[in-house]
Length: 275
Ligand SMILES: C[S@@+](CC[C@H](N)C(=O)[O-])C[C@H]1O[C@@H](n2cnc3c(N)ncnc32)[C@H](O)[C@@H]1O
Image 1 (cartoon, rainbow, N blue to C red):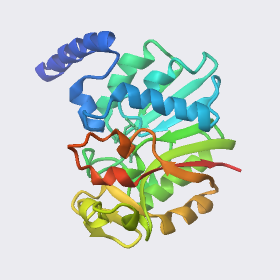
Image 2 (cartoon, rainbow, N blue to C red):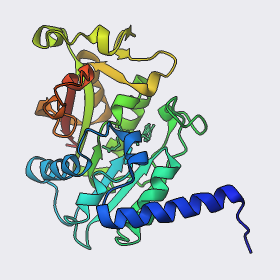
Image 3 (cartoon, helix red, strand yellow):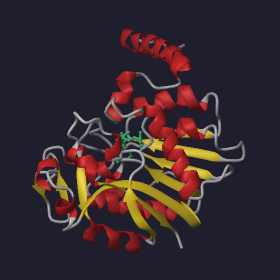
């Protein structure tokens, strides 16, 4: 018989209490929601809008097999449970084990076709063990998924890791599969078009093809030069479907007036396909 120490027991009690609240609110607790995005961003509305976007513009079908990279605490998975049929499947992975635990307890138990995996990958924003993200092999076979999604994941990857993740996406998508992802992206016109929202202010460290908010914690917030990014798609075997667009979830239109959030003005959603 396994005996739990006091820490595990306290965690079990807290998890049960929070799961009881989730059964009423249909949302993760504030404590965890705050770890994936600011609390002023409406968790339910952004999630369901994102699913609408995938259905209306990215060809999502009821029986598709969907991959959610950096799935967090189910912002996409929860509304997707009402769209995917029993023939559809969802796989999500994330570096934060407690987020995966929450998703399994609160989503997989009711929807066994929604599965979550912990990715033991290093990041300077909270998980300092595991493999280098630039070498991580997604734990899925080639040609598995119809659609892969990464919401505000590439905003937390440096160039070598981002390149690897794009290669992995191209490997696990079926031919014709669709890849939807959000990025902080800039080009030489961006600052002229966004007066008062300088790149230097949002990401002070210019690293050449990308910019960082915090050099000591590179993954805390990363922006990419469009001139660097576009060829990476082609090299990964992914074709960008124009136009790239201001994102539905992290759009500056959702930012309250009293909040600066300069970086959100550079958010871009890119739809791509495996030809
Ligand atoms: C801003 S949150 C977005 C979460 C979710 N996609 C959403 O839209 O609510 C970024 C997520 O990426 C995860 N993450 C960061 N680095 C990762 C990596 N190398 N591989 C997989 N997930 C990662 C974080 O743990 C976090 O849950």
